[in-house]
Image (cartoon, rainbow, N blue to C red; front, side):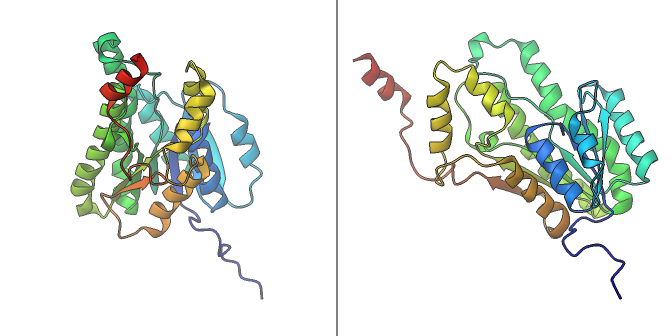
Length: 276
């Protein structure tokens, strides 16, 4: 007799997942991976119309996908996202905070307080508020939160002070939230990718004076000699949600070894050699 249970390959069967910033890049890959592993995924972005992703995944025989327009810089829209999810599926098992932005290169002299505040609102406070409104439901399911942070929040990055500050704060907030939520058996973890080839990376390189050189530099920063893929990030998130049941407060460095080995970092010496 054939089994009526889920396919063995469905690692997150009948779980309800929210993915913010889910229409492209790491977010889109995460939606696909979780749906293909049996989850009901509610994904959002601030676009007014659903992407083709929702229509494509509706034909999936494994999980389901539903798009909700949500600007995570607006608290009322975050509340609506949570409410729609619970009304539709009755619970939340996992929140994946992914929506964010990396501005083009900027030095502190040319960065206004308002620009910094706007980025904080998107990259950090948006994560905080989405977690805040999801947590009452996650406590009921003993679910988990996964915050997409960045390696540069740990090691720094040239001409990116506001962005680095937001991501460093995301990693620190993850650990503090893990401490507080452990009493409810809610796990809170983060993933800090290195250079991952996404539409955002492509956009940033297009602003460079030499896009090809910037992309090559992005590849060369990893010991593995390539950028990571959005799907690799999504698979790391699935591990934390499905199998990493004894992991809380950890930060997975998904970096291809970018943080390892010494390199030429003396900017003064490098500039001197250029000048002469």
